Length: 311
Image (cartoon, rainbow, N blue to C red; front, top):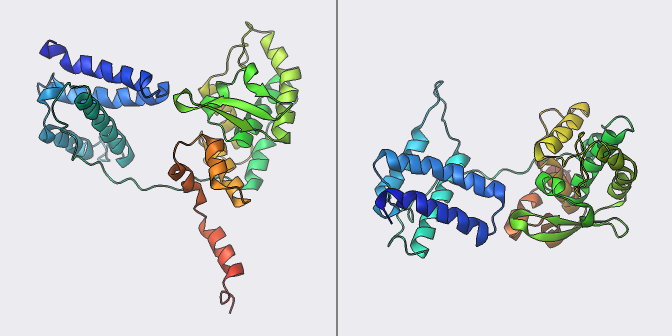
């Protein structure tokens, strides 16, 4: 391997490993590539074109550069979460190089990123979800589609990428279940309740055929106005527009209905392992973040349960 090509070649091999061996989703691989492209540019500025020539001091200097980078107004260029993600990417890359025999040692082994406070997902209240689900006006094909999208996201705790990836063969509305392909193409079966089944049935019987007539035939469940598969961006705009009409401007983000589904199920006594299976979390610790209660709910339970709370 020519030294000038060693860094680029190893990065290409690492990307293939993420796709084939780890089964990482395209969006996750894209994030790794962005972080490692920035890292590779830094290494090349210092004359590094071979992963075997990278030392712990070089890696530490790169992390320090990210910490100290500033925008024109003096604010940090990179948030702690962005730095932590970049460190995770470069550590994963260097571990891969060691395991594949490309280098003898891992220069990132003792490098740590900044601590990132673990935030509690800001779920909507059940009343706010109700207002959001009722915020689609009209009875035309697009309105039927948009109601089905909102109901399905909340009913099954789906990611938006999972929603737009649904195909007709994935739906079994008679039994109220949907087959979902999550991160890393991992398959799971998700139940959907009566409201979502009703919205999906109406859309499939009336709304979708009307949209499909305007475009080419395809198997995607959710179609855009031209009859093609709806994109993640298109689905997110539908959620955000409904949120604006429901008075939730600034409260919405792509996972809001997924977070709300998990939080409300746990509030109503669902077993955390069931919620883990529903959401497709590989680790129970990921689901456990939803078990944290709000200060208001904590106070209300305390007032009811503690024998001296009201004395």
